[in-house]
Image 1 (cartoon, rainbow, N blue to C red):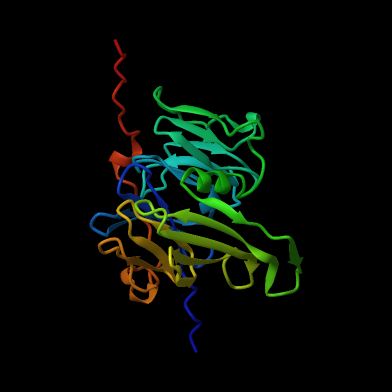
Image 2 (image 1 turned 90 degrees about the vertical axis):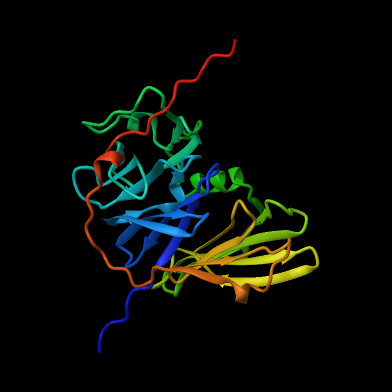
Length: 305
């Protein structure tokens, strides 16, 4: 009898100022594929696979979607782990900062030409052979730069992108031997209003616990509420968000779904359209083309008279 195919999980970063996104397709756990998503047409460009771990919640996409800041580890020499900037859907680094451990790492695009790197001050040196263009500023991620794991990167990014923390557990159940490593006594709950009808619809993300055996690291459920009460439960899901045009987007079991808003109203979550199925993909090597091995050009700013 053949072994069951490892479950695929999708996590998505959406560009703030463009209709594009980057999908981290993980599965099995030690393999990640980067996919670029054109949200206007729901078309997809497959990029490079990575053998190791990409810490998706410590990553960020530039506002125009042209650059990806990511934190990765393969626990091999010479770097063990590192933060890097690439041009999605490729992971070939334009800049790379060695890390060596899983504490901190990653960061944010504060603006299109400014990065806050979550490294200690002594970890801010680029690896040999890498450089950044003059138009790109690299700075520390605040006074405690280099601290934390997924937090504070994930928390700050959620807040930046319109999410609000509305519930936090009063206690946790911590048990190494159980199926779930840590369970929250009331979930950590974030809420994001609809971009066009904020008083009408809210998307909720509930983090139930951490490190499920043979499951995800963060155990997450999503749901939608409306002005008239509960609208629909997405349930276990790797990611969910609103599109810039107002549709509900979410991922489950390696598949992407879209629930379209029609004249300011949604149907049931069960009526969502499956727009992509990445569950059966397998690792394949891909060399980055020459054009993504170069920094994107940036026009110099004209001075105001």
